[in-house]
Image (cartoon, rainbow over all chains, first blue to last red; front, side):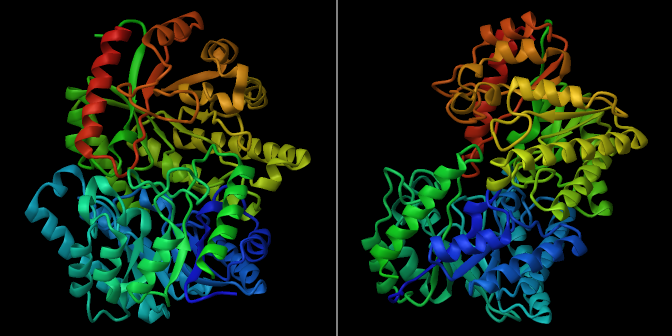
Length: 300
Length: 300
């Protein structure tokens, strides 16, 4: 049913709403027409005790397998993004984050996913404004990622994808920083690649004239492993569905930017994040309309 | 420096921004003039391994003690709110949540806090729309809370505060449901009381004519243990600071509603939640202006 582009889905829309694995898998396959998903850690927290966590992992794995859906990756969600992780000011917290990401790798492999993906964390006010601290934390973060690649290889993971975020207090946050970071991570035990999110790449307040998806895709193409699709106005990190007014992401731009950068072989996972108090039926309706629209307009 | 009303602060504003305990304690005391705080689980995740978590708890405890600030409570934040917890559809996940809240009690007691507070979780789409499932999950949630009160008493906790949220898929979400739930929880080993959040109580899309703080305070007064203060327009759960345009929470209303319900003895903790991509300096500036304004206007 697909053309060149690949449309996938991050399960973020389901958080606190559709929590039955069988029902969710059926919705993803039959209502949204999707066969490739990223499983979000907002549905299963990597910290949960192994024995209970594994029961839930196996339920999702089986439900999605039964529908013929591939869980390509597991990916950090809103809960995980609330912590400073590998860029925290204290070594104790960075070590905790290292353990957290190892647990996320365990979860990914057990779920049958090939990729573990996440932003790496964020710097505190002071660290972000101190060039020598930025450099030190950056180098240490690279070392943690190399160790995670080593751990991932042993466990059977295939790739790690690092998400670029729209914050100067995080790495990476611009095409240039992405390229540098990917170059610095060459030769890891399993490949570490880049996830570019449309809404982050189009975030004008930080990026100014670099808030240009064609620039991002063309500069970063050799390093991009997957893509997050969202509707946005470029003024905040919206994660809107495509029924929202005021969006600047058009099917024409998606096709043009992707094809011209030679990225048609990658999966673009729609990642919709709603406010908690939004009505479930409205969320579903927005998702259904969005997926129908994207399938039709993108020809995939 | 205070009149009758007590102004406290939830540390939510500091998440991913001010992560040095000593600096944060100094800011809270000297810049914001506050001596009573709720520590948010977005700064320390109750799941973190005990040994490392306890190092961080002790650092915060010592820093805040040195400034003469009381950590009255620890409270669930954005990360924790991303999960369905005690109202999840699967028993496995509800049991995981029970363990999570026990860990939060451990963390609270070690930090010297007297109160552990949180929303209880959320129901899935199907459960929320099935009256018999709602009743069953509600009853089971009460049983978990009774067991948490028992555990808390053993550990030396003094109270548990349950936050009312603006979602029909969660308990409690209206004055009536609050009263029922508090009545159902009478006689627990330590008291379980109610936290009312201004923005949740004023959320018009759900509450309609019950989006009235005077109604909430007067009906729920006997059960309220603490209060979250935020600026809001009543259209979404904003958690704005008080510099924001379009807010409907005025100092006059705060004073009138609080005094008339006989709640002047309770602490109202400002809980500001910003988007992650907001600039640190702007967050600080908004917090500073807000705290100066509230101290002046509330006379506390």
